[in-house]
Image 1: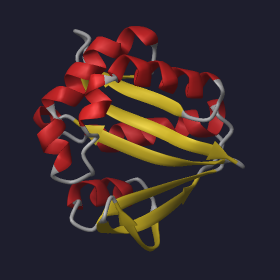
Image 2: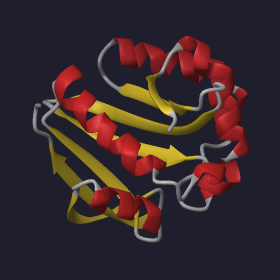
Image 3: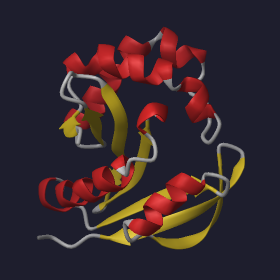
Image 4: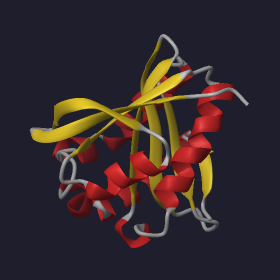
Length: 162
C-alpha cells in the first residue's frame, strides 16, 4: 500500500510526472487542468505549498516505495471546521481500492491534525468510480450541482475525533 504523504517541495518532479502521465485519463471524468498548469507547474506547486502553510488547504500524495506518485488526496477551501475533499488515482493504480483507503486515512488527519468536523465533496454523475468511493467512505448525497460543466452530485460527511 502506498504511503499517504503531506505535500512537500521535493515532491514536485514525481507529482508533475503523475499529472502528465494521467492527463488524458483524468480528463475523461474531470475538467482538464489545461496547458498553463503544466507550463507553470513549479510556480503552481510553490503556491500550493504556501496555501498549505497558511492552513487554507492540506495536500497529500499517495507515494509508492520507489517515490512514484500514484494518487492525490486533497482538502481545499478549509474554513469553519470544514473542507472540500478531492482525489485522483493514476490509471495504472485504479481499481485497487487506493482511493477508498486514502480517503479513510485522511478522515483521521482531518479530524485530529487539522481540527475539521466535516468534509464536502462532489462528483460528476458519470464518474461512477468517485461516487462509489464517496459512498463507501460514508459520504451522504446532499444535492445536485454542475462540476466542470457536467451534471454532478454533492456530498457531505461528518467527522468524529478519535
